[in-house]
View 1 (cartoon, rainbow, N blue to C red):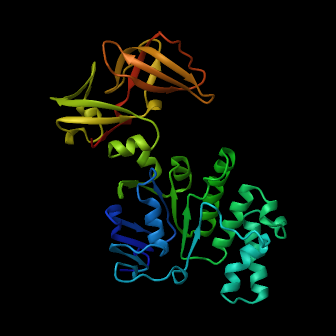
View 2: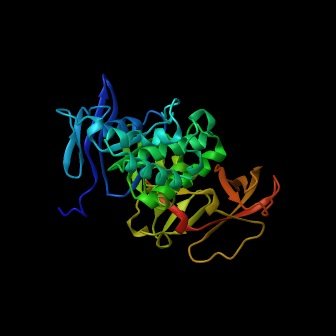
View 3: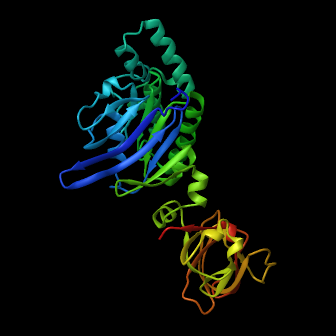
Amino acid sequence: MSEAARPRLSLQQISCAFGATTAVDRLDLDIAPGEFVSLLGPSGCGKTTTLRMVAGFVRPTGGSISMDGEVISSPAASLPPERRRMSMIFQSYAIWPNMTVAENVAFGLKLRRMDRGTVRRKVTEMLQTVRLGGLAERYPAELSGGQQQRVALARAMVIQPRVLLLDEPLSNLDANLREEMRFEIRRLHDEFHFTTVYVTHDQGEAMVTSDRIAVMNHGRIEQIDAPYLLYTRPRTRFVAGFIGRTNLLAGACAGEAIAFDRFAIPRAAFAGGETLSGEVLFSVRPQSIGLHRAPPAAGDGVALVEGRLLQRTYLGESWDYVVAPLDSGLRLKVAALPAEVFEVGETVWLRFDPRQMAPIAG
């Protein structure tokens, strides 16, 4: 295999059990050089255990982990963390309070016995890159949470690791700082192109930062895809519900149409509709359902359903509505722009576009 085609990291049938509890269950994952992959999932899904196996802090009980074609972890042997040419950023930042910003960033370079001039130059360049150039002589206690996180990033990146590992790095920040740091992490990745594995339970972080997202559940990857595909084309009920909000609509293939509760859509209107059969479950995002006071033009394959508005919540950037199709037990979540104001009890029309309805495995 050529150097370009070979993955930087390859996890093959990786498992990790703690007594009778299986934290990671025969997981497969290849990560290309320079790729940013997030492990996303709820608490207890195995994402942090997977990251710790990659880092060398936990030995797998099955399978193997390879870097650039060489096995670095298996049940038989595990390369020590300090020999893996990786950097890890922890949830707590783990920067030394008795060292200045510059001394924290320089620590890894000094361990590698670089001369003072090289250390000074690299630290200065990195602090400028993470926008801390004027804070080199400050101590961590004098920094904000976001600035401390930048110090942790600078210290991890300055040694030019083969792989950069991040374990819930933004969970201790407030909402505004978390949003700012998401874009900062992506900016730094675009500049340095480190192979990156990022663990988070926050879908927003994963969507902003990642080239691909691996959604984990019960120790396995349910789906790995680019953020857009993961959101618009989830393959399982779990992924559809974990990545954003959704409506799950049950349909049944009947001749040339797919029948839902109170409406039907021609099978040919769905992408890959010819492959659908029997009972089918669809994920329909709230913002993909149109909401109207009068029946709009139907268009090819589009279904129009009359309903009654039951609830509404104003969120500033949008309205969240709950609508019940007439004579149906369905309760559908619909998102609308702030200017699209409807009243509780009002009769409305729902517009379903089959191009925005994703069939999923139940």
